[in-house]
Every structure is written in C-alpha cells, then in structure tokens.
Image (cartoon, rainbow, N blue to C red; front, side, top):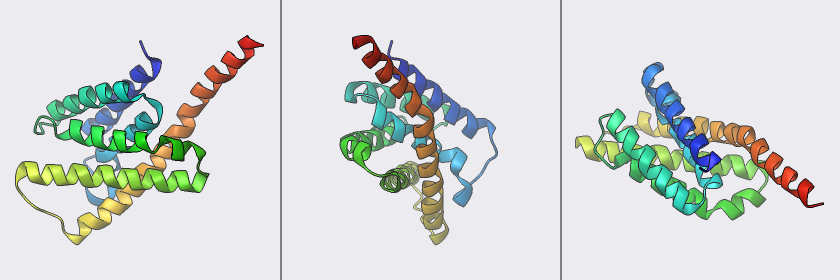
Length: 170
C-alpha cells in the first residue's frame, strides 16, 4: 500500500479530530474547521492523480458523513482543490519560498470559499457578510501557512527516500 496515501488518510482524520474535539471556533479563528485545506494542498502536491482522486472521494465522503453534510459536499471541495494544486505542481516545486507561501494561501482561501459556498447552498441560506470575507482571508492565510509547515515536515520523508535510492545505484 502507498505510504503517502496512508499518511494523508491519517492527516485527514487528524484534521477531522481537531475539528470535532477542538474548540468551536468560527470566523477569523476557523483554523480547526478548515485545517483540512492544508492537508489537501499537500496531498495535491504529493499524490498521483488517481490516488489523489481516490483519497479525496474517500476522505470527503467520511467528512460528509461525520459532519452531517450533504453527501458529496466535502468530496467535491477536496477533489477540486486537490486537482487544482496538482495541476500547478510543476510551478510549485520550482518556485521560491515566498511564491510557495502565496500559492498555499491562495489554495487555502479557495478551499475555504468553496466549502462555504457549498455549505450555504446546502442549507439554503446565503450568508456572506463582510465578517465572513475577512474570515475567508485570515483563515485562508492561517491554513496556507500551516500547509507550508506541513510541507516542510513531510518533505524530509521524500528526500530521504530519494537520497537512499541514489546511494544504492552507486
């Protein structure tokens, strides 16, 4: 079984646990609610397209079931943001630190906006006041920065495997 696939399942479950067991924060402090955005960004950068789609479908349906959301809501959000990040992986890998931070923030804001849009559509209440717009940017920024830190934490695993592989060929 793919080690990265299992790792991202565990990270997704951890993000859900923080959301379920953590403090009930809303608005600008919605890090716990949308921490999954950071996991999706790294999954999009790490997993292949078929594995990413399988992960997004399974994890999204779990989140839908566990949060009593309409079936497919989170699977769609995870899939759209994950594939969007996947399509930009070549740029992401070759970009500077600052560009990676900005890319992560934009992807996290996109995750937050898609999730909020589908949630409002699901409950048939269009609530998009100014405070939510501020929350979108601040929570997206927080999640983007967490995505960068998560990438730093995950990167040594891949580098060790690559270095070990090169060492064996010599």
